[in-house]
Image (cartoon, rainbow, N blue to C red; front, side, top):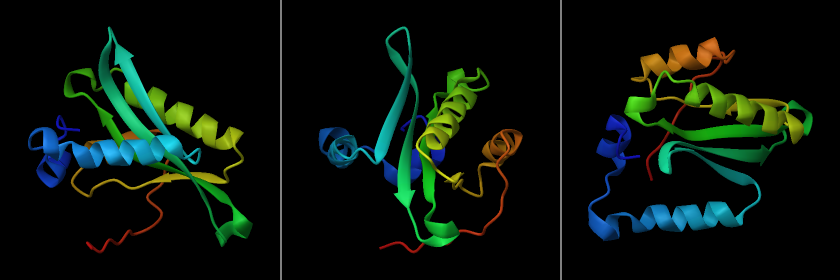
Length: 133
C-alpha cells in the first residue's frame, strides 16, 4: 500500500500505531467469508494484493456482485502479468460463486489503470460519487 503514491498520500502509515487500522480491517475481512484477500508472492516477498468482496443486491433481479478493491502491484513488478492474473482469477471466482457481474472503481488520476481494465473487458459505465465521513 505504501508503494502506491495516491494511496500513501491519502492513507499514510506513520509508525506502529499507523498500521493498526489496517490490522483491524484485515482481521474483519479475514473473518467474513463474503470477502477474500489475495496476495501474490515471488520469492517470499509480497508483490501484489487485492480484495474481492461479494455483495448481494436488489438491482438486476437480486444479482450478486463481485466488488474488486485495493488492487496493488509493486512498482517494479508492474507490466509483468500479475495484475491481469489477479483480475482474471477474481472474474473466474465471481462467476463460480454466481455473480452477475464484477465491478470496481478507479481513481480518475489512474489513467494507466483505466486502460488496463478496459483491455480486460471492463467498461466505464457509471459515474461514481463519494462523500467523506
